[in-house]
Image 1 (tube, rainbow, N blue to C red):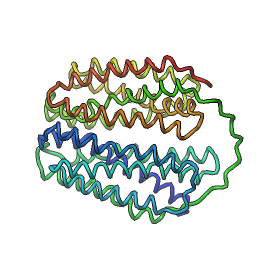
Image 2 (image 1 turned 180 degrees about the vertical axis):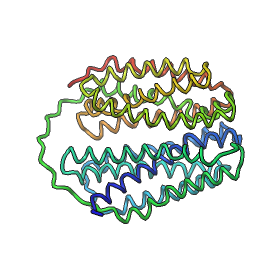
Image 3 (image 1 turned 60 degrees about the vertical axis):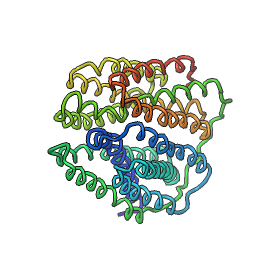
Image 4 (image 1 turned 90 degrees about the vertical axis):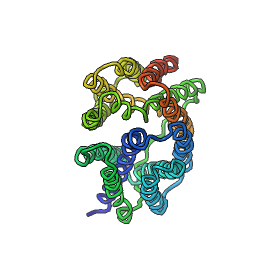
Length: 385
């Protein structure tokens, strides 16, 4: 196998691993914490504040590597080693919230480092935009498979949701699935492509007002963190244990719909204004979150399917808008991205905390209202072509 093909497989598997861990942490750990262990949600919320603060590693390391060339694989090897072993330790310490929080923070930090380093490697190894797009597609496919696999494993493994032995097996399978990323790093070849010289477009002056407005949007955009942890436990409590199997099947469909949304937004909607697509999509998602909690399980899953398709539109168009507004300045782009991290750190623990004494329906409605409110700062942004 040529070194280029080996690199592509490593990139694929790295994003596959990151997606597997994300689904374990954000879909199945909430069920385990709330429906099996019945943990103190206030303590868990404080642990989450600490753990998710590690996500600030991504904007910081992105700025650090902006003008630097990677010449060896030591950093990414350390990162994947830390990702695998911190995941093993966090699933082994679920009853000890503080220890769990420490290893979750380590895991999130090194996934952020791996993400930035692989993006940098793709830029270095790509001789032109076409090659870069091919590599980017590979990592997105890896993330797609990684987001689907844990749900398939759940459907194949679980008979009784409260069976602790099955939960142990489920976590063990997750460890086995992600572990091969460590030896795979030995096949990674660091190279610097002979890039075709491209004329750099003149950069206009940064509009600080527009940057501030988009930062506000990025913060409110993460309001979905309010129902991030309570959602799956709430579905089990409201619709019964059998509904979670149906919900798991729905997640697989949602992942595919999200990918379809990304493809549509990146091709069919390529000529449409980024801002308008985001405003319409966010407004529709907001209305759906206000309505969905008061419907039956089938209607709820259908409505959430629509939001996942729209989320694909938002993901592509928001990235495009951020690049446009930042004028390709990495520091400005990462400043805006850091406000989404701040949103996660505030909204996700807040949702976990409030879920102890506030109905999850209220959290979903609040997130929906905030989604609608978030489009207000976008209305004042003048988008340049």
